[in-house]
Length: 99
Image (cartoon, rainbow, N blue to C red; front, side, top):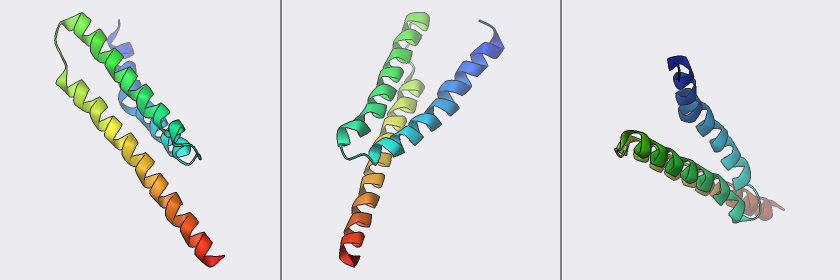
C-alpha cells in the first residue's frame, strides 16, 4: 500500500466519515422513533471494533488511542441525540403554550 493511499484512508476515517455520521445522527435524531437514532452509533461502534480487530491481527497489539477515538465518537453521537431531542421537546412545548 502506498503512503498516499494510507494518508487518504486516515483522512477518510478521521475527518470525513465522522462529519457524515454526525450529520446523519442529527437528521435521525429528529425522527419520531428513537430506534433510528441508535443506528449511526451502532455502525460507528461496529466500524471501530472491526478496525481494532484488523489492527490487532496485523500488529499483534491493542491500540488504546483507536479505542479512545471510537469511544469519544460514541459519546459525541449519544450527546447529539440527547441535545436534538431536548431541543425538539422544548420547541414543541413552547408551540403548545402559544397555540
